Each structure stands twice: as structure tokens, then as C-alpha cells.
Amino acid sequence: MPLLLHRRPDSTEKSLDLGNKPLIIGRLPESEISVRDSFISRVHCHVSYVNNQFTLKDLGSTNGTYRNGARVFECTLATGDKIQLGNTTLVFEIDTKTGNAILRQVPQMVAPPTTVKSPAPPRPDRQITTPVKESSLGPAHPGITPK
Image 1 (cartoon, helix red, strand yellow):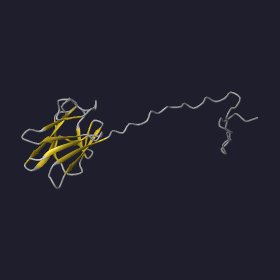
Image 2 (image 1 turned 180 degrees about the vertical axis):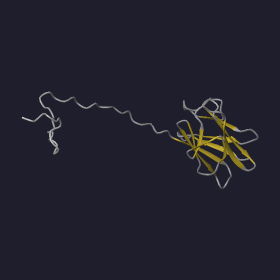
Image 3 (image 1 turned 90 degrees about the horizontal axis):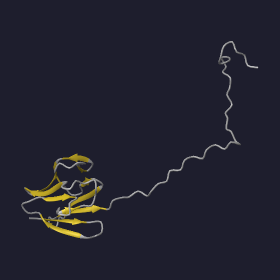
Image 4 (image 1 turned 30 degrees about the vertical axis):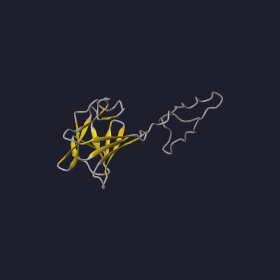
């Protein structure tokens, strides 16, 4: 039976045996693969090894499980697949020498805080006006002639 290595962004690694039971990925610390992300369900999905294939199965998560951008409920995994759970991305790879699976957790990108600057109000000493041209068809209001 192959192993599954979970590589975290802090370079720590956890080796798990893909035995007869699937490995749970979720927010709970008790999960075999625990991920700190408030958008992941406590018990989000699992990875298993059946019939010489690695499979991913959503376990009724609130925000869904995505593989390569498409929502999945159950699918077979292949090297290079990107698994999106909440704000977390896991890249699935198979070590060709050992046949072991690797789930590499990609660091979350955090956008820098933005400050919204409102435009300065117009200064009272400067008024911006645009000249209005009279239409070539005549005055805008019939019967009223310009002075």
C-alpha cells in the first residue's frame, strides 16, 4: 500500500499510510490531514487508494471540493491535479520511483490591505464648466431666441 505525504507550507511533512480506510482532509485537528482554513468544513473530503488509483471524494462540504477549477464530488487523481478546498490549494503528485502520493499545500496568498481614497471635493474657487454649443438645428427650445 502506498503512502501519502502531506507537505505543508512551513516545510513540515506528515507521512500517512493509505491503508483500508480513506484519509480525511478537514479543519478538525483530529483529521489525518488537518488544514487551518475557516472556509473548509470540519470533515471536508477524503483521499483513498482503491484499484491502484488515488481517488478524492467530497464528504458533503459546505463550500465544495474542486479539482483543476471544476467542482467534483468524486474523482480519480492524477499527477499535477490542483485541489481547491476553501482558500487552500493542494497539489497532488505521484512519486514515480516509490508510487507514493504527495499532497503539497500551497501557501495562501494574502492580499495587502488597501486603502480607498475618495477624490478630493471640488474647490469652491475653481469651477469646471464646459461650454455648450448651440445645435446646428436651432435653439433647443422653439420660440425662445438667444440674446
